[in-house]
Length: 181
Image 1 (tube, helix red, strand yellow):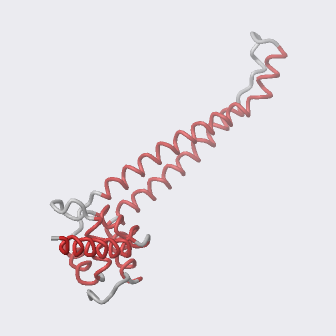
Image 2: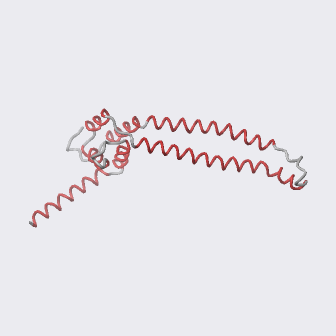
Image 3: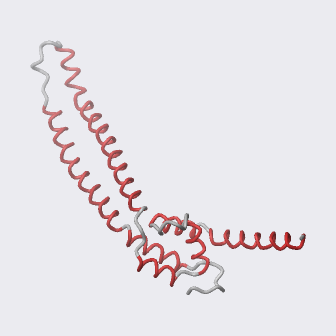
């Protein structure tokens, strides 16, 4: 497939990049999914216990506040516990989001194995290879999963056509400059 006559990347290029990225990030994706499910299950159990505790409180024996204040506290007690659960849920969700983001950030730094690298080199079209070379910066570092993710996103976004246009414009300008000398 590595032909110079191909001017536009094919769907197979995007599919190959997607397949390799999914393979290389499978552990991180599974870890994140398990983390989210476990936290959700544990939090669901805890929030039910917390709400049951809050609903089970009886302020009738509190003589220090008075009858009107006790009735007011008893009336708004479920709302207080609901707000507390909502705030804790937001904080927990933010905490889980930060952990998932850190796991994905770490997986972007994973090096591409030799088999996947050779598969890319053999099966990507010339424009897709150009996009991969553009995404892989600097070239003195090994290719990483983040480079593949960027190449896939840019390939879908039309980077191959822009690289070809830039190469054509550079050639025209270099020819014009050589005519001047």
